[in-house]
Amino acid sequence: MSETTSRIIKIATKKRYKNKYHWTDYFSYFYLFLGVLLMFGPVVWLGLSSLKTLAGIQEYPPTILPLSQIQVDVEGYDKPLPIFNVTQEDGSVKQLAQIKRIGINAKMVDPLNPGETVKVPIDKREKIREFKIQWQNYVDPLRKYDFLLYFKNSTFITVVATIITLIINSMAAYALSIYEFRGKNFALVFVIGTLLIPLTIILVPVFYVVANFGMINSLWGVILPGAATPTGVFLLRQYMLTLPRELIEAARMDHASEWAIYWRVVLPLSIPAIAVLAIFSIMWRWNDFLWPLIVLSKSEVYTLQIGLNAFHGELTSQWNYVLSMTMVTLLPIAIIFAYLQKFITTGIASTGMK
Image (tube, rainbow, N blue to C red; front, side, top):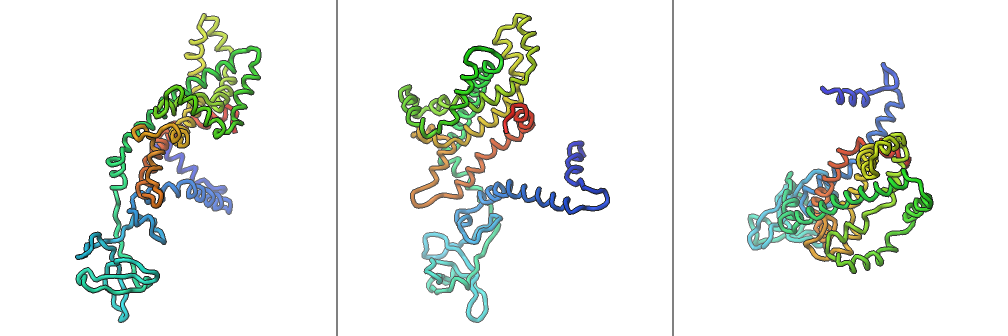
């Protein structure tokens, strides 16, 4: 057993007293279990429901496991019919297929004798289910609806936009934290003040600018308008204020250029804050829906979030595809967050953000 695993087990089983459990121990375990359930319960439900059939998702009461009702082909009917165990008047149980439901009664037929139909109260029938994983929920969208293309578009937007955001914000933060010039505080207040402007107010002007530059239905029309973020500038500036000024002065005495100081001294020391900003940027860009929906109207430049919206029709929604593709969109974010989480505490604690 590794040292990390042993440490986790020791922390998880730690008690107030060595020889007995205190009521605070039980409360702590209950509180932690409730927190884990509230945080990961919806994700587990999403993963299990993404493996259900459309009928299994819509049935009530819902089931946790991907159970599917058995269907049989009946002579004279175009589509397979769901099969039920029906309790008859003499107490015997017989398997019948349901043709349709009419109020509190169901019109049913014997699969072995399709010539006769009977009406059965719905409380006298019980669904026959089987454990069945519907892998087609993942295969069909990737094959029929170009979700691989949408995934590629979202990946390109997220990676390129995050790189541009890190470069622009780190340069602005470097100037506002290292240099001393007239109007520095006003510039910082102006940058932070842009957070007070709601996005809905600038949608039309930004769209007009993007349209004049010919970036409608272009991935660059999604990337460039949000390249600089006031939150990122403030976060990086606060972190860079904690860097030792002696290092920068020593680099200048060695005749290092300002670009060399920024690239070789300040940026490497600001990795924790940059990692936090990268996580924020990746999550924002990956989950962005409103602005891509406005700029992109051609299916070949759709992102994953717009592609998910295509499964919602005017009258019906393909929830099996929505849930499965939502699960696919969660995986990259979860992997990146797990990889960069070690920087979050250090970065946020050092930047003064709450």
